[in-house]
Length: 149
Image (tube, rainbow, N blue to C red):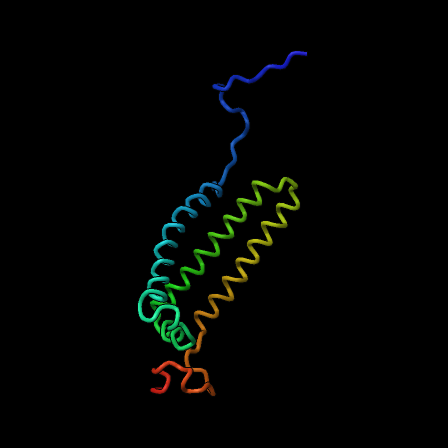
């Protein structure tokens, strides 16, 4: 029985997939979001850890003061969204590479995206609905601008 190997320079005869190439767009997203995340994370670390008193300044009042500004809400929200989607896409890639059983792979990929969507939803709700001046809180724990209200 003789077996022949196809000519490597012969045109590929399998039908081409139509529609968007999601793997290509996932690859591009990972590169673009990675660059943006480096800027966002280092900006976050510089503001929170380097400026002021470092880690000793971070308490409820510090976070409340930051999230009172729409700029920091957008900054932290963008960091949250990009990081969770970036991480979920990376986990999806790992599952696709190492899980060979089709049903197991689909369940794991769905679980990854559901977990990421849930965390994005919760994080976005915290950032956008955060009340820096909750009623009934001790005045010494609240930021200085709460006494003006």
